[in-house]
Length: 229
Image 1: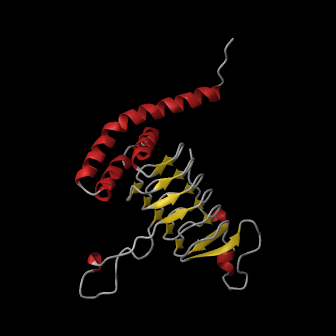
Image 2 (image 1 turned 120 degrees about the vertical axis):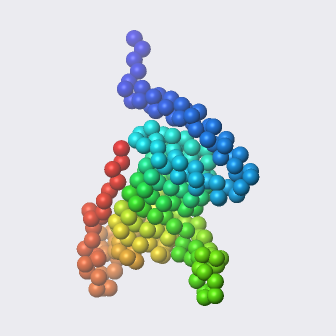
């Protein structure tokens, strides 16, 4: 007797659902690309991201993945992008089995595989998006600099963190932290501004002499882990 195991059935059902969702979003993708031939792609894309961010529940996750797999630079298989999350730039990329929580704001960011991003996280393109040198014209009219950043694979970013610089592989960023400078691989960084307090390969605090004992005592347990489903 031919027997199909439950895991195989689930894999088949998931693949079928992804294909159905892909067919469903194709008209939207076509309209988006048509609009992009008339207006700048960077102006058209955020509106479509806002639209798809409003789709609820698990169906919304699959439809968002289908749309972004056709419009982002890269959106790998099994990536989960939750309700309310917005992408500002189509040059962003999302790695395999990456989880992005609700109500995140993401710019031109390269997100690696197996990354966990909690809710209300902001991934910004540096801290100089608006010029501030001149006083005779508004800051909104002064040219700025957009720095492309990356989040390394197997990194976990805690809830409400703001990241403006590169974060390496296998890192942990504490909830509510403000990352202003690059974070090396395997680092645990917490605080505002974020400081590296530990290397995950070593149980010894990274800087035991800086006097920040309260910060050094922070542990990843204080971070809100995303509810990955």
